[in-house]
Amino acid sequence: VLLAIGRDACTRNIGLHTIGVKINEKNGKVPVNDEEQTNVPYVYAIGDILDGKLELTPVAIQAGRLLAQRLYGGSSRKCDYINVPTTVFTPLEYGSCGFPEERAIDEYGKQNLEVYHTLFWPLEWTVPGRDNNTCYAKIICNKQDNNRVIGLHVLGPNAGEITQGFAAAIKCGLTKELLDETIGIHPTCAEVFTTMDITKSSGQDITQKGC
Image (cartoon, one colour):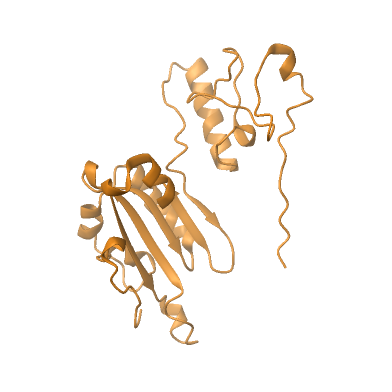
């Protein structure tokens, strides 16, 4: 049984209308520009009330820190809302960083992307004999930018740990070539990202026979 509890943006009764700050009437969230500035130049918003942004505590902390540095420290750094590592801590974890495939297609065009993917079998599943084709890994590459990795997705044990590590590499401009040149740690789940060679467009079989 899954109990899913949503959250509302409680912005309608705090006086925003008095000073002219616009909100999305549908969900109560606040539209901002890339510097967290609302339609009223001297009013900023950060965190879960931002319209179209991620509802994640570390994102709010980072955005707030960077906003303070821009306002009072002479910085120009903005919060990156795309390359954010995140994980769903279900019994089989799902981790991602960067673009989902559907949004990447909308942003760059399907013809400009190459998607590599594979199923994989974690070592710890070999003894209990669990299904060897349940875990999944995928990277989305921008062919127009040296096959730069713009999306990474993994479904399997310790997905959060895997995603956190690769997130730093993605921020540094990770490419498919660099992944191919990286020596994997055998037999870890993360190793699968260093050995991917089947593209989604090829239609080839991605099932595995062992770890």
